[in-house]
Length: 306
Image 1 (cartoon, rainbow, N blue to C red):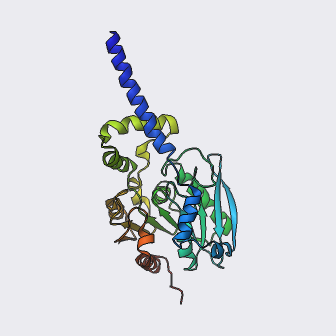
Image 2 (cartoon, rainbow, N blue to C red; image 1 turned 120 degrees about the vertical axis):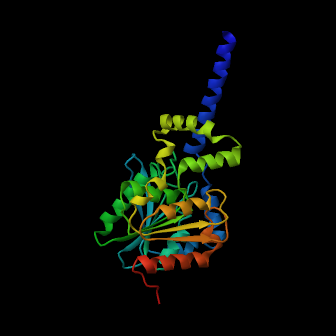
Image 3 (cartoon, helix red, strand yellow; image 1 turned 90 degrees about the vertical axis):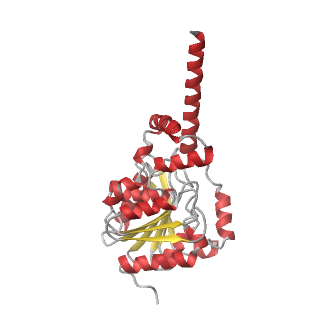
């Protein structure tokens, strides 16, 4: 009897420890050092402090529905009603969004960049890979719509988790932008985790995911299966440009292809030749910009600056 009890205790202790470890890795994923991001972007020439500081802009504090402040930066050098919100990836912050902001600033759009919950200067205790972040994005969109008024023409650009967040916002909450650009999103969080568990940990996902999901529901009040852009992609009626690097081995390019296939209505797909995860812009800048220009001209009533 004692041996059976001891064996049961060991098994339970193992699964509890594994569940805690798994959810800690998700909820408190280690973020990149902010100084590292700043130095990386400056050294790569994607962020010029002097040029960026010279732009007319203002810091904005937007209250999240979850009780913390979302830190945003509104950059408005143009007299226009056209704006693009930039939604960054996990472990990054709004400094990483500046390169995309510059891309749209050069095309006559004003931009809003912001830090996701638990990233950069924003509040929030956990990362949820789009589940809670989609509500924050809606709050940012609502703030901008109130600030600019009914004539606002809005686009949203998202990278990685930011792209999944954007698709969840548009597919689950409201198709509230005029166009979307989804750079290397995952199509389904459960499938993404299963792939990474097999790839990085050499474990059987079918054993770990159920216990991990149970702990996640207990600790952070949502389920992995709730984070599934592909399950809501058909709800998005406005144009979407999907972007993915062919060499991405973190979020597989097949995920963007699947999203593209399931999206109804106006859409485009650009598969970048070079770079791994979230490197499509960095490694294929000219082609990246051409894809965006083609998309904007086709779906957004946009003419290239002369």
